[in-house]
Image (cartoon, rainbow, N blue to C red):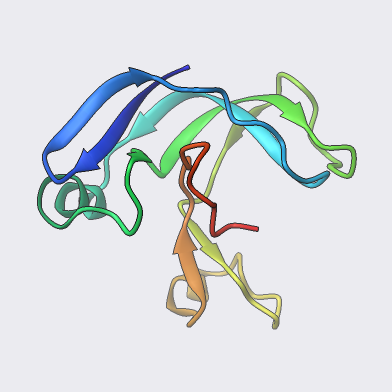
Amino acid sequence: MTAAVLHSPGDIRIENVARPQLSSSRDVLIGVEACGVCGSDIGRMMVKGAHAMPLVCGHEFSGRVIDAGDDVTGLNIGDLITVPPLITSDPAGTAHTPKSCSLPHRTFSRSPMVSTPSPLR
């Protein structure tokens, strides 16, 4: 697949990278059809760098479901999908409310390189 890959601040390359594989029966693989660059990306991509590099850029994206684990329900191959950029770990169950951005345990969704562990498990 083709991706914009951040190697260091300001060093962003368009590369062919391996297609990610499902690593859990709860995973969903999305074929990205549109991806935006948000304000938090600019500093990361051009000045500060990311917590792990190389990193496939973009955490605001949409596309179609191209694969899903056996335990995934409510989604089918080919479904249009968008991903909320903010992922929360919320024992109280309020993760998808207007207050979710202020929860103490949060991270951004991302497209990890195959060799980079994902924090979203």
